[in-house]
Image 1 (cartoon, rainbow, N blue to C red):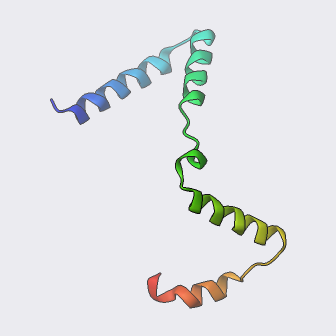
Image 2 (spheres, helix red, strand yellow):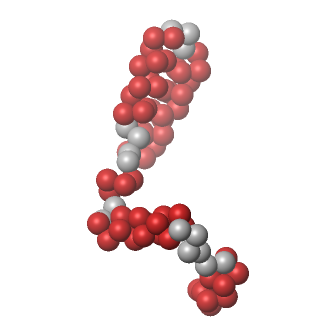
Image 3 (tube, helix red, strand yellow):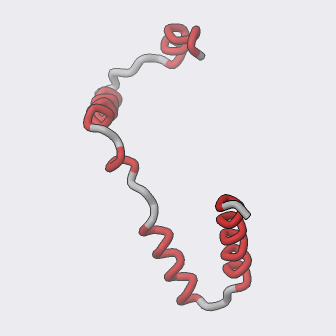
Length: 79
């Protein structure tokens, strides 16, 4: 059995166990664990990407926007 199949089987076992679980405290702990493992993509991107996003947000807040139609027309050969 390969590792991908093993991983899938483990996931299915946990899903089955969760569907039958009645203990609210355990469910709360699972929810906390899930929240803890949610990745913060902001921490994973480069400084240049962050700067670009912040510039875009600033432009949007100042209503310096380019209409969608113009962007599509400009980049249509790549779409």
